[in-house]
Length: 121
Length: 109
Image (cartoon, rainbow over all chains, first blue to last red; front, side):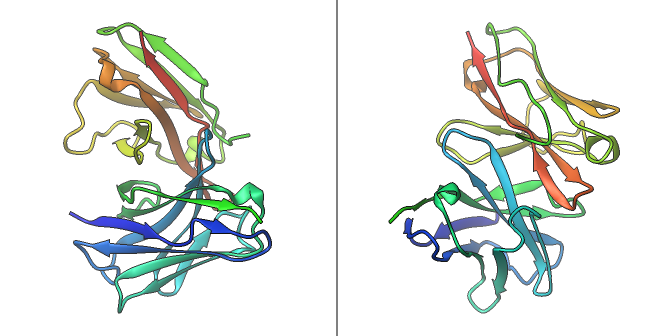
């Protein structure tokens, strides 16, 4: 049973970079066939796909966020990470990491519990 | 504004059946499989339906899915109070993005 746990600062200042990490247990981020994904949920709103990474070289990002997002893998720590630059209050949200396995990048079988991030000075 | 359109809320009495619609276009639902998620307040979403109408192991057959053209529907039969949650449809869009519906809040009266 793959389990995921998000970690990172809960408060980020405007214009700075939001950095979050997802630690994976019960499975390896190096194993093929997995799409390691970040999703966010603005308070009281719906879900927004941020992007995913398939292996160390294949990543896909939401076109609306693509210029500010980087998702990377750290196989030595069995983690994957999110960096979102130039944040504004609109980036305040609950951030989830998730795993999709197989051909479809939106079949998320495993989720973290979510970590809240507030953008404020 | 979400790419996929869902009703903001639906309600029904325990034991009854409810349907939740998800409307898209030829660039998303029209050419890709749909998945549905259930999000109980305060928890992470859970995969309910994939490939339009398949249920992962452990999901009761009270939950069903269907797709026709550019729309999809989630059905929940034999409603229980534990089914109160937000429900989201999701698929792939030709803009090269995963797209979610805006979510539907189910109230079991």
